[in-house]
Length: 181
Image 1 (cartoon, helix red, strand yellow):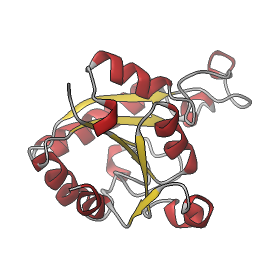
Image 2: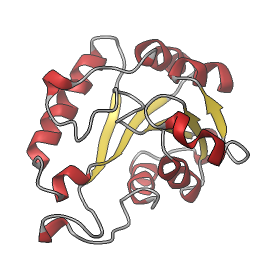
Image 3: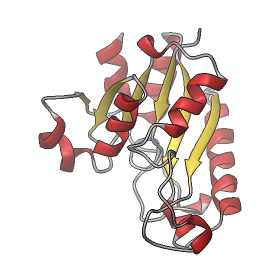
């Protein structure tokens, strides 16, 4: 069985920018490369799970998102960091284009994307984690049976007080390594 770290994208891997969908606007968060390399040295693999309601809202297309994710994966590969897969939820329960306006199992805090990855990649849930900067990320991990860690990049500082008694907290991905090693 594989040990995997599920990673939120916006605010966790990259600097949070409203409805990011262009590679030229992408910037890695602090200590992402160093943190992922350190976590890889512990035998972890990585899967990205990201809510992308900008698709539902018509701000960008699924193809735009796939292009951005592909560029991110290529850039991480340059540092010898592999991403098993990038899962995304294009839906929103109330807003946007009719085809995407729905409640679904994949939008975090629902665990659909994580459960799909767990099944597909034969993941050892007890030794895997969900890392994100929002309460919905942490709850998705919990709902999938994973340990969740809040990271204080992105929106993390805004939700820290709300979740501090329930979840582990790390400054950034390098600090996550220090927490779990």
